[in-house]
Length: 68
Image (cartoon, rainbow, N blue to C red; front, top):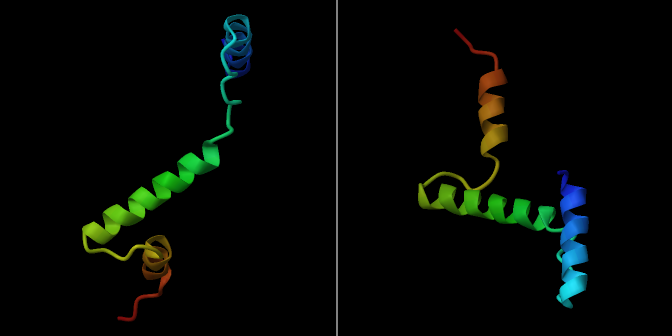
């Protein structure tokens, strides 16, 4: 069963029982991604690492030509 089919079934059941409809699939995706980003930043600060710019800094170190 796909996500859309499950959503439609849940909406139908909620309508039959007079309950509020469930949220549409994907409705809270951005909120979940932001919460994950905030959690990762917090974990980095607690571990003593910079809170942002870690990926770019690592990429810059990796791509920088090495002087022998």
